[in-house]
Length: 300
Image (cartoon, rainbow, N blue to C red; front, side, top):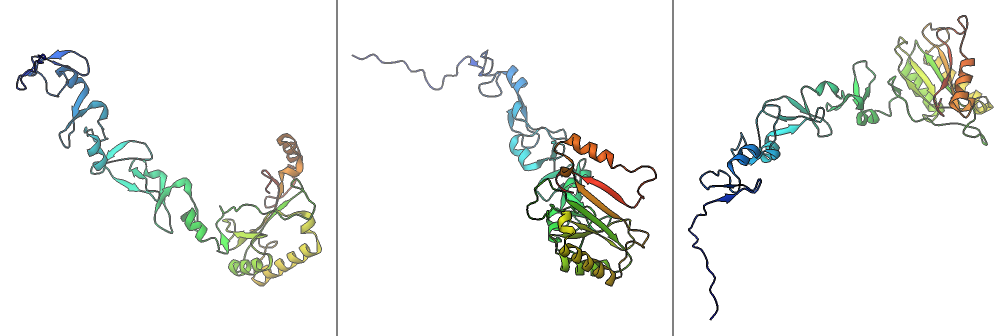
């Protein structure tokens, strides 16, 4: 006859429980959390101040308000500042949400600024100056304005090199900056851009001018610049500027700056620096409004 196994009655309460953390025993009357002795419960668990749930202390979230929250309540009530990385409750702190969807607390939002065009907030380093001194634009809005005639002073497009056939990457390239003042800069810019094209030159604002603009060329080889076509182009540029009432040499506010590509002065930074030192003006040399300088890297 098969032996029958003993099965204790289901309504019998064991005399001791064993803690799943420390392995120690405790009586059912002592336990507050199932499977956890009172000592481990006090040491390893805490209570959510919002919903009252008992949670492992390691899973608790503690925002700047000082409250203890479970993960669910923290997700619902809090945000993490992308500036300082601190957890804050939305109801107890001021905050903003920037154009990237990041939340910023009031202690950090001084490093964020509003785009003057679209009104969204961006990290200050992601904005650039507009035409007015107090105007800041995000890259999207600045690009949308890319077809404007005269750009802000900070505008610096990717250089487009104009070299003669057969000239290598290390050939001399000049970047010309011609300031003009006294007439209608928008009219001058429109006429000159129609002649030369935006891949050859562009215009920028300059605070040293009263009501003018600075003509800036992309890097151009002297061979191209002094060719018959190049000379005729510059005669046309000057005529267009004069027709718009612009002046440079007799305006008292203007200068002509010529930038030179560093690559022309040698293959190494040392050779380039030595060549630059040789061109430094003496105390009685160049005037304050005219400069002859070496540009950084390949660009002028």
